[in-house]
Length: 75
Image (cartoon, rainbow, N blue to C red; front, side):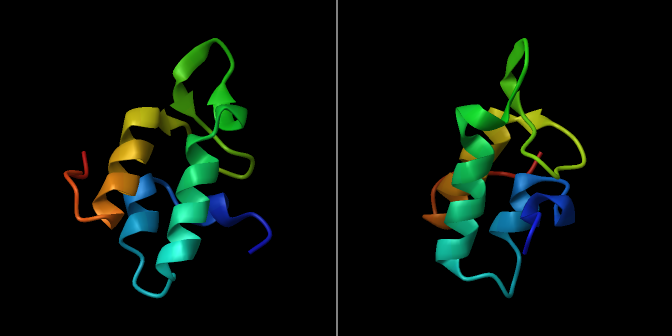
């Protein structure tokens, strides 16, 4: 995947994707949560290169928690 984020509109799409390995999901979501993906002047939003739109970092972190069976509901 050269621009993996362009395939997903929301972090929960990554977390629930049936054919991605858990390690790949974690890597994608961790990159999405990274400060490098922060939207300028809006630190609560993340938009990695290739992503179609910005999403709240809280949604990214909730998607990561859902991989561990923790709380995380899709908005």
